[in-house]
Image (cartoon, rainbow, N blue to C red; front, side, top):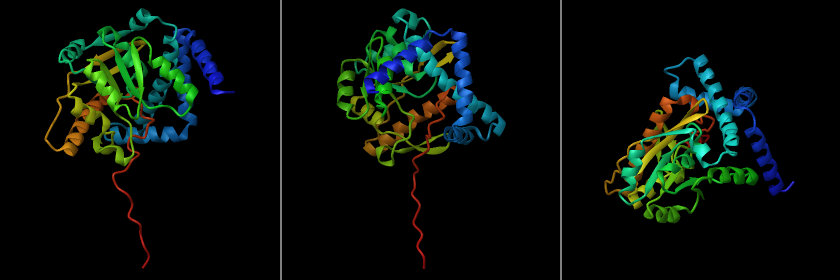
Length: 300
């Protein structure tokens, strides 16, 4: 099968899943999540290690395992919810969202520099930018292309509904600058591990996590206000919260500025994850990149 045929098959599968009664889809999502937790030893190990690093001083191993199972179930729920919304028109889609903090985004947009949305893998992050469409300003989402092209196409189209355009990560800085100058919104996820040369190591749950420098560089260059945005679910209803602006720190030292602002952004993300740990994407190895390398031992 070629990529186009695989894409059509995936889309048919999504549309089929989306036609399931909500109670049945939720049951299947939870059952699939538990099965995934049981058979995927690699991601189970990453998740439990991450949760232990973050909450090991507050939870027992049994509590961490229970939380880990909930994490897997919630991640699978993203797939079923994505399929569920494919059949919706704009108004039906938006009826499942409650948006809080619109006053923060309106105040930021009034400054005429656009808005940088600080996003993370919390709740159903796939639908976040589309859900703020009632604000009345076009939204753009920076994303990393998937290696599997049919799935990448399907997710890109799903993300690109309702006055939203997706921007593949890479040489996107110049385009983002133009978008912000037009007074529009650019959102980007900032909670994934990157190679050591792509950004500073900042504290995340008490351990150094290498974090992309591009977001802070864009904020420093454009002076666009940075607003954290996140969404969490409860019984197929989603609450989107837009938080107040994170003040931009400028010391005159460009390297220090990137480090300080990236740390500030990461600290806000950590505070959100602490509030909703069961809905976070713990299967990602956030601390994969180390801030050291082993010194080779020699004989003699």
